[in-house]
Length: 304
Image (cartoon, rainbow, N blue to C red; front, top):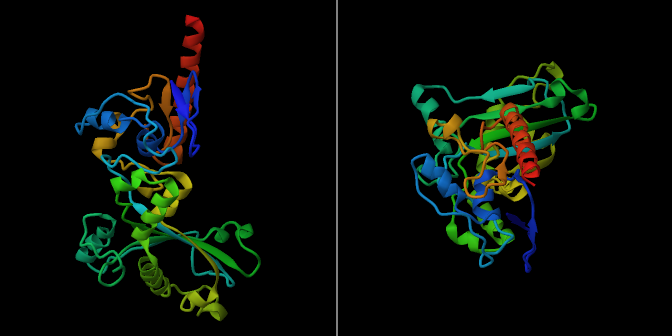
């Protein structure tokens, strides 16, 4: 077997006894291996069929694409805010849910669906949503300078919508196109609604009571991540940081195997392969893959 480099012009093939792929499986099978691995995985799960792995130089090597036949976990927009005030009204972990009525609670999760009404900018009263706020300084004072604070806000959202034509473009151009799916209006509306929702939190210090109501003016620095930026940074399929979802069709034995079905000495590790996503499961998967890799090397040595 062989693995290709990511040079823009020339393709270099490096032989290896065992290859451990720690890139996200749907991205790796569609892009790095340039195979039909994803189709084979879906064939086993009752979906489409595929052919054996192939090697081609007709498609740009440094590109971004993924197998969209899988079901993915939710996308995430993350706001990282550095502030010049302490936010003592927040705990370490804070969840903001829409639950004024059963209907609103159900609608609050509709923003995760790519088959919604198509107007992705209506976050808020017309389209309720839920989000999570992490304030590390509540338990770790070193997370922010004295008198200041830092919070991370995670807002579940839709995934990237795959455009097959973008797979033909160089990676940088494709990523820029995908970033348009989360434009400035989308982010601005979401930010405004988050600020309005957190304003109801009462600060624990009486002299600091208006901090949450005027949170915008206390933001010193902001970093925003969207599914497009996660795709750019980490090459995750559909831009989701948590890998494939855990529905019954992708749970346990129905989840893509760590062992490639097309290339005998290729192993996958990470959230989108077995046993699943989340730090504990990914670490268990890594341990299992390490043992399989050693076993393959040991067996090859014995055959020699």
